[in-house]
Amino acid sequence: MSRRGRKKGLSDEDRDLWDRVRQTARPLRPTRMDPLAVKAPPPEEKGAPNRQPVERFDLEIGKSSPTRSEAHDLVPSLSDRLSAAPLRMDRKQFGKMRKGKLAPEARIDLHGMTLAQAHPALTGFILKSWAMDRRLVLVITGKGKHRDDEGPIPVRKGVLKHQVPHWLHSSPLREAVLQVTEAHLKHGGAGAYYVYLRRRK
Image (cartoon, one colour):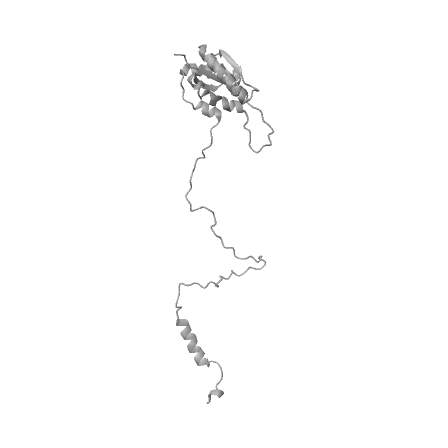
């Protein structure tokens, strides 16, 4: 039979042979997955809603990263700084002073003064008290008021309250001052300071 007279396609015998060869064939790359291969969803039951298969991924951010516990270096409050200051006076006297059992021998009220007025007034008062051999004096600063300040730089509440301990620990007052602590409630509490003076040589 000529080529033109042959039927197109495989004969039944050839097709049988091809099927048997195809069943024994192995893929060249068995580990390579077909990216388009999609797992068919299980057959739906009658009346069940049509749901798409949901794939679950572990997307918790930072799960594998090591945890660090870093302490924030926050500035301690003024009360904490004064409480943490080293004790330079007699412990018994200090305990009595903190409980308000020692009466101040003199006092100065800086409440309402500006910084420019308060600094020389405090300096004169402390040096005069030291010269008079006083041991415990009271410095009243007030707790400070909230101000409606619309400026670009915030103003700290209680400027005198924060500035007075700095002045007391700076020259020339540090030569006269032995200990500074917040006053007991009956002497003004957080709005005043006990200043315990050194003995003159």
